[in-house]
Length: 223
Image 1 (cartoon, helix red, strand yellow):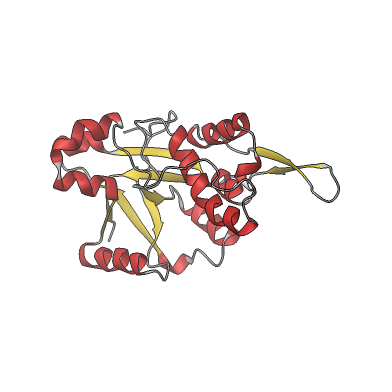
Image 2 (cartoon, rainbow, N blue to C red):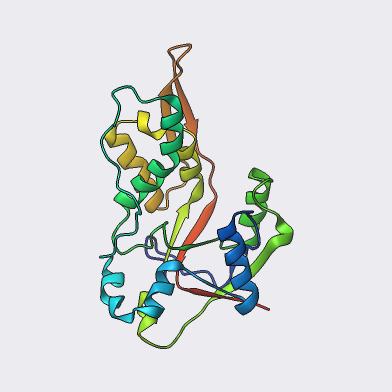
C-alpha cells in the first residue's frame, strides 16, 4: 500500500508516543489503548458504527471542521482575540485546502514512520515528547470493505509548527494557499517572510523538516 500524496509505500512500522497529555481526552485515549493495545482514528471509528457512510468517506464527502470561520466581528480585533483564533485558523486553513480524499487532521491518527524521526521530535520538543512513551504499531487490515477506507498521507509537520507561530492571519491569501499546499504535497523546507514591526525589514524564516503520517484506520501495537 502506498501513501496517497507521494510515491512511497506506507511504513511497515509506525511509531507513536503514548500516554502524553494531561487533558481528560488524552486520558480517555490512553485508557482505551491499555484495554485493546490498538489505536483507532475517529473517522474510522465512526465507520465501524455507520458502515453506510463508506462511499462518502472514501470520496471525502464528510465535513470534519467543527466550526466555520466568519468575517471579523470587530473592525479592530484585540490581540487576545487574534491569539485565541490563530491555532484554529491554521487547522481550518489546512482543512480547507486538504484534497478531499486525504485524511483530515481533525479525525486522523498522527504517527512517525521511523525511530530517527522520533528522536528528532524529542530534541525539538522535549516538553512534548518523551522517548520512554514510544510504542510501535502496524496498520491492521480487516479483510472487508473497510480496508478500502484506510487512508495514509505523509507530511512535514514543521510546516504546521511554522504556521502556528507566524500569525497566519497576516499573510495574503496566495501565500496561505501555497503554505497549505506545501504541507499536503509533502514538501521539505518552506520559507515564510514577514515584516519586522520595529525595523521595517522583511524577515525570512525557514522551516525544519520532520515528517509525520496522518492515518485513518486501525493501528495495532507490535508486542
